[in-house]
Length: 103
Image (cartoon, rainbow, N blue to C red):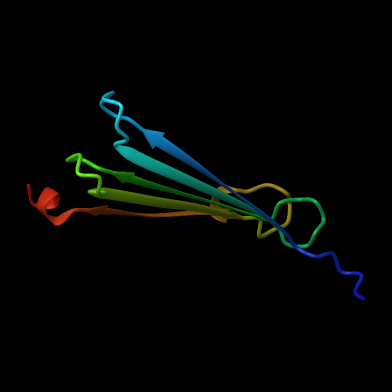
């Protein structure tokens, strides 16, 4: 048996259904997943990652026409319990249905 504390990982996903035009039909879905990691088990969060994915149905056919994904990751590299600007990275992508992108 080891005296080394085990890492703790907590992940929460929230989903929002959005009626953009007020007609009672869902036009967009946004899912936010937040993951917190205490790498060394000391009770201080060492890594935070949040991913937001939004899918929008522009033409009302029930299929996503635009999908946007953004992920922000913060890693407390120096172990001071805080995330400085150089410890935070973001990346994203947007996918648009081809015929919408052409117009």
